[in-house]
Image (cartoon, rainbow, N blue to C red; front, top):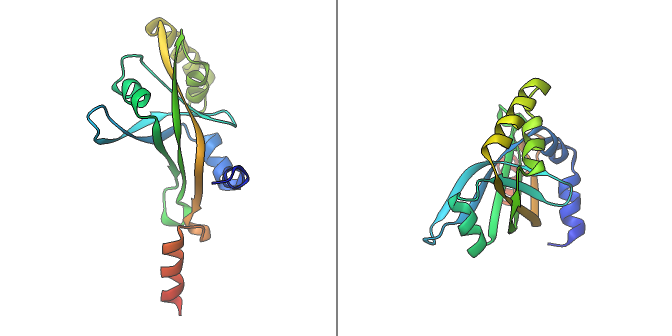
Length: 164
């Protein structure tokens, strides 16, 4: 997918809202045994990459180092009319950093008040001497807004066929 298409998908109003308000995503990757995994993860969008942080001993660290191709799904909406999803494919890079990954704290602050965020940060700094910073640069992106009719092509064709 060309970069201008990726940028357009990420710039859609609903996509920007998901990225700004949501801190939970689902990460799909191939584990060390070659079988697929989907795990909930916190994330932070920097404007260029999705950053996921975890303990250096997390099984996904070794798996992503060996098999870096991933998919990420970020969704929201409580009703079918409000349903939105951002689907991302990319390649993960893993970097072990000293202390707490700054984007980890930034992601947490999206869903916490100032006092809770300060307590969370203090607890993290006590717990983690080092963390794995997993960065995903998107190579393919689609934003879906089902209530607005922005959906996968096969669903749109099916819906249009049923209207005729």
